Length: 176
Ligand code: FES
Ligand code: FES
Image: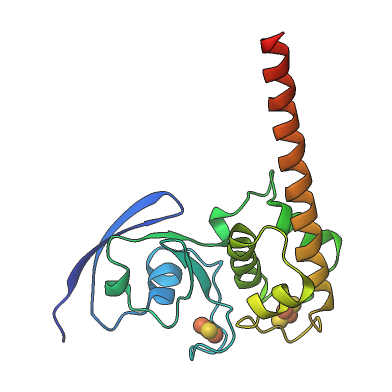
């Protein structure tokens, strides 16, 4: 048996510490060791994107990374994006615009889309399709996924502009 390595990482804001063999894949660390089962296993060969998480600010297919490579990293999974009582705008939009059917690809889709909108808050349809190309869906035909991401982007941009307007209004009032 190979020597185990001491690993520390932070998942959805919670620190985790454990010993793992060098061959342990991050997706298994998340699902089987830490019981974080949002990221799914679709192909285990880096094709489907069902296992997508964010590692230190980058979208990563967690079946392509060893746990030891994530030493010291901050990881966000679908469990760290919104809550049942307070859904992320992407989760609301996927629900509203039928961006899912069986839902197997959805945790990876939303985690990837959240990163995409962080990098490009107002993507064109082409940019969405290009940015989501690593995530495969067997059910929806993608049209409603694109529509959901566009709707979430519009919602996030309008709530951001109304909150900056409110700040601007307060600043003007304070100056008067
Ligand atoms: Fe990781 Fe498919 S399970 S890309
Ligand atoms: Fe079924 Fe995407 S909703 S795989």
